[in-house]
Length: 381
Image: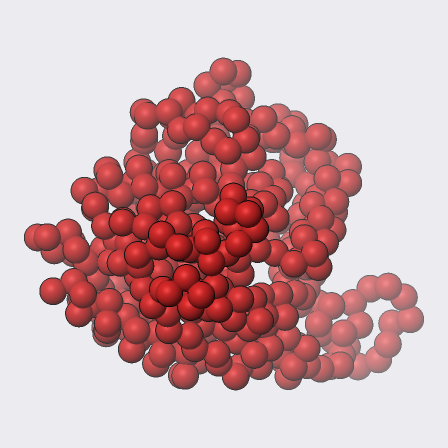
């Protein structure tokens, strides 16, 4: 817990639940008659409503992006190093909106929510959602907040996919798209990792065909394994080696299959803790949304055509050791934007941390993001 909240923190914050009565038609063909989104906001919306920033989260993210919910909270929001007074996304200049996506498990309507048709949790009956569905729900959120146009839509990884989709679906409703450590579609290898994670969850004997909440249990082992697989892909070999190497947990080998190495202990801890805080059906949904994302598919598999009507300016960043969303994937978007004659800035950062680098305070990355957000702020004048 913080003894004193830092001066560059947004401080103590409260989430807010917003209910939408309007129906939302989903890509899968189903319709949600109503839904809730959980959000947090930081900073002040200016008189012209021109300084609003939307933060889109990655696979296991949520609305708590910056600040603290209480003085007892051990850590601030998941992107606190980038959001706050004087930080790259400066809350003295911007009104920042962060949300938990539809289908999430942190307050927004999703598999853990009550299905009005049954009075029980949706569980596996919650419909599959896509990045396009999220963007549609986020547009409804913008309408609710009185924001006709975002100064920028910002996201890393799966969040970056949402920023890209925003620029295609609602070109007139954002001035800048900030896409970090992301891709225009997943590689076969990425889809394969997601399938291994899903199979780990669904093969857990406590998964119960997705109806585990009805039996007051959760598939801890499967969800923990899924997280372990995912976590390995978020780190580079160098980062894992530097942090753990072959360091032993004890003085000697146990000659069994218990924990011998520190990396084993770390992965097991990550898996166990994640299984207590995240919903398994939500994990299935989020990975499927990742798999399905391919905005070029509706434009003859041409990404330049998909981006042809985009009016936003773009900032992309990638990291040298990110093998889950490699720099090559970002360059594909940059090349498509240039072919479509769009305005784009690209930053490739030499960093050993792997995919998780987008969450970290890496000086060159932080300075580059701050410099671009200064441009965004100037457009708010």
